[in-house]
Length: 313
Length: 281
Image 1 (tube, chains in turn green, red):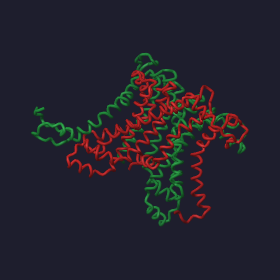
Image 2: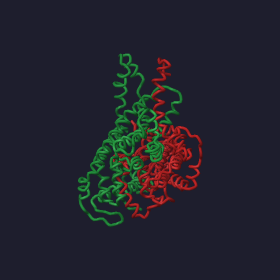
Image 3: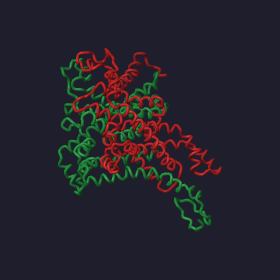
Image 4: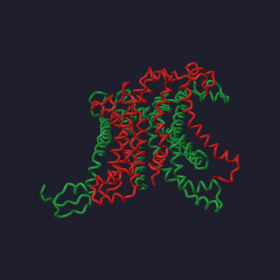
């Protein structure tokens, strides 16, 4: 322990020359303390996120039936994907689903936030209740929707028939177009509170003086919204939208429970299709290649959001 | 309060939209509840008014608890949620504290990486991860999900706590340092006790997310005795084309109650976390 060491400047710490090495002092350096503290969580993430990520890329280059050793096939799986009409249908579905659901959540969420940004009694209770769809486990609330859209006993159809629609009413999950409409609507139902309550928090930070000033300048209700509220909410809308797009784009639970991707692949998304190929058909390599096809769009979104969060944090 | 509105206008402008949003949000839960209380004769009768229960019965609940492994699934779900939340909070603090308080080379890169990992959705990783879990011999053990849930929860907790830690004043820590406390002592004795609200926020979120998780549980847990509530309900109450609707609804309702209860106790923390997590400005 008495070996003289050259003082090394780690992490810009001022080296203390000619001082004997002391463990407590070494541990007290900001960089040493930080890296030691972060070592365990970082190793954990490297093992269970980093490794699977790169292993997934390797898998996508293999022909790998489940429980058998894989053989390297290069880009063959991706070629198979590109020649698979279902794959293109899946890509189309995913973009329609993400685009429509995000747009609905944005408009609806803004409406919810504006409605909640008024003074009324029991506001906290109302806010707590409105968030329920977002916090209840998705699979469990989706089961309720499955029952509400059941071909024989659908309450939605019974209401529509009551309003004069001819019996037996639409087959919500049996018709390709209506099935897509249904999963979009239910995703919106679930995600809208997140949008609404987050935007509400943003609305509450808008200083009232701005509205007063705008009113004095002769701005009407719409103009106040358009020229005061909206510009101030823009950063929050952007962040929430990126969040929502990422998790809608990679959605699995809702579709798995409601339609399993059917009818005729009309509601298959990347995640459910990759699951069917990888787990259902046992083609791990091909399934991994389908899942990886999400990566370009996701990487773009993740980098954008990470940079944005970093900048605003 | 809002002034300048007449009574009718107030109803139209304030209550109409609020009641509309409330109705849309809550109707499915109402539906779930009454379906779980209806006897089969009413549940599958197209001619009765289905908004009301005429002869409420607890039969579906009794069947759910006696004929299925619902209680086992509930125990598994709770166990997994509590342990993975605890792991995630501890590991999350170990990441967030240095990032919030220390200056060292690479801090910015680590913070970015943590945020990016938080945003990586599970479907991108589930196939390779399934293979890893299989090779480790962890299939059909609760350990498989206790290990994998923190992969989403640790970055999440770290990110949320990082935001919270930055709002805590540094003076107490600086005073402790001057008094000769080591960095570890300062963190454990002085700093962490100040951060209880942050831990509650992160903890509720992690707990809710664990209860909500479906994909990993679906893949890793294929035996009744190790299943969690969402997987058990979907895999065992829907058999082929046969839906046990009464039990499904009872299970969905009972399965939602733990989350809803915890949420109702800590709703303010939840909303604070929700809005600071992403709206952090």
